[in-house]
Length: 329
Image (tube, rainbow, N blue to C red; front, top):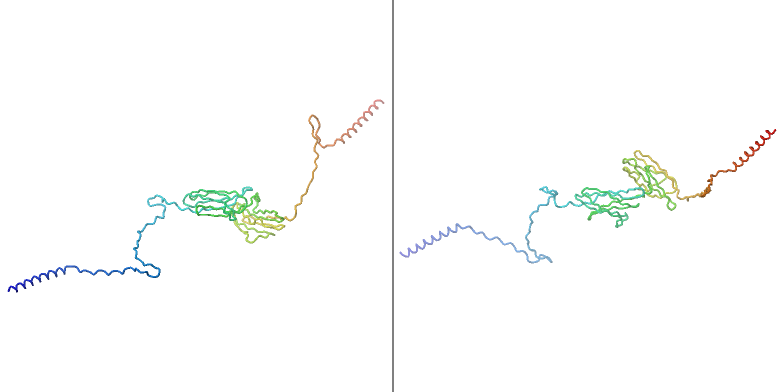
């Protein structure tokens, strides 16, 4: 009997323990299996000469706002960044003042800030050494005019700052040949080594911009010569410059609005010049010496007057004798 009670008590205690453990197991969360491990990076070369690759983290920088393009900031103050420097703008012209020539250069600063340009005058033959140089300081959008006195020839004007360069070509005429301009066309002829050379210039002296047309008779112009062109007030154009020409007579005609003028020219360079010498003899007048009351020689002859005086004297004496004889009788 005692054994039966002991077995029942032990069974009761076992059932109690089993029920408590089942409740505890039911309340616990299920445990998930660990994730599968990724394959390790290769440690052997991928191919000949290629080292093994290692994965590196990619760092993405934080976005940066770009600077405002407007030079004026949001608070109304100006941006401290200076405006960019722009190359100079050039306008060149040749000017004759009497017999002297010069190159007139108009320099403009298109930058939005003050800029100092260096302006060089060079020969147009590609020489790198400037003949003359001037420094020009300009404010924003300012224009200045400078002059280079030069002889006749072809030149190049170069304005530069940093690595910004502006170049313009210009030709200066032989100002001594032009002289006063009274007609719309001027033909200049000179002889060189027994041959003639001709220069034709067309002038706009009417005041308004006009289109001029040039034609010639008995004078053939080279191919490519521009014979129709426009000229502003007081501008002129060299149509041909020192064109070799044979002896003869030719004509140059210029037509424009309100202009119709023809200039005839004769070239005679093969005939040697003839020089005529004239000799003039002058008899100097007699000069009175100091202390002598001589009259100046006027060139008049007194011989005839003396003869007449003697005749008159003889007649007077004869009349006097005749009168005395009458009284005696």
